[in-house]
Length: 245
Image (cartoon, rainbow, N blue to C red; front, side, top):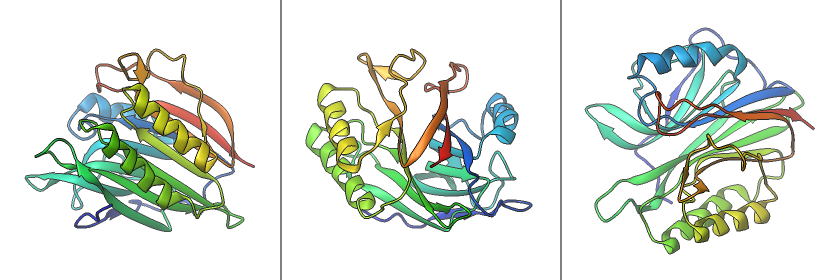
């Protein structure tokens, strides 16, 4: 794994919550670089802000010196691309400010001249001091299976020492049988469970295989859904509601 030039961070505009609530909700979405450009998406985010504790976005665009779409949320972000002082990458926004966050870039690139992919590891705490670890993922796409496997192995290295609750979510680009098998191996190795969205047609898929996942451990899954919003992005948002065990 490589380290990007910097970790982007912004606190809540007013005041962040002190702890992750016992019951919390999460959205995971590849927003196709539309999170600040599309007025309809801005309105959509505003409509769900009250009910969502975490937003895990892939292909998000952001700048340190301007407000994110939801100014009342804190965020950490890891960029893999910069164009005209605007950054693109993975972004995790939350009502609770992270205690620690680390940004990483994939070792491999998208094709010979393409960018690296970014991922973001964030740490939050419940009131009883239990640590919740969240990994926001946008995995390599246009590379051979060996590069993809190496990237998943690097995920394992980041996560294997954590003993508490964990969420690993994002766009895994599991468009082949081999890629899906490698992801399943990671799931078993860390003891994760996939939110069961297998029968949701709205989940982004390619060659009949889902690309987006929410994986978790050490939490109780209370509910989940996927909304069909093709006018906002080429992926659809995944939702999950968890309860601390």
